[in-house]
Length: 88
Image 1 (cartoon, helix red, strand yellow):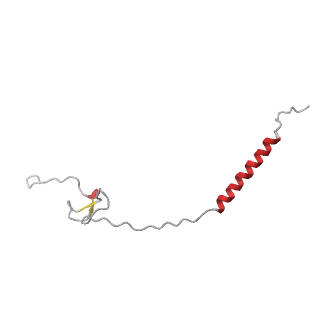
Image 2 (cartoon, rainbow, N blue to C red; image 1 turned 30 degrees about the vertical axis):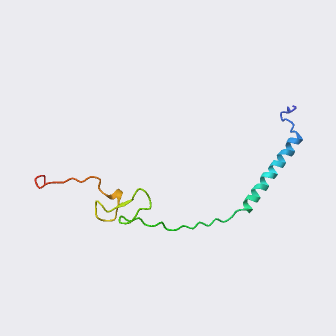
Image 3 (cartoon, rainbow, N blue to C red; image 1 turned 180 degrees about the vertical axis):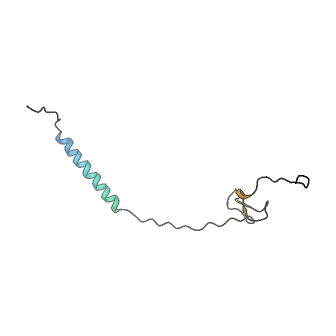
């Protein structure tokens, strides 16, 4: 029983182009790996914000108005209720 030919013949110029592209891609990755540079990052501590000093930004993060202490604004109570003796 003869086997039918189903494979398409590959054009030789297409094969040559594929080899050139594969070689070029492998060469690029070699040079990219060899050209890696070391990046050094140095940081400096940002000045700490105080409720009594000037704020570095427009929106203050600390206040001394409600609690008379250097308290973050998110920890300051948002409302105060006065309770009389009769209510207690």
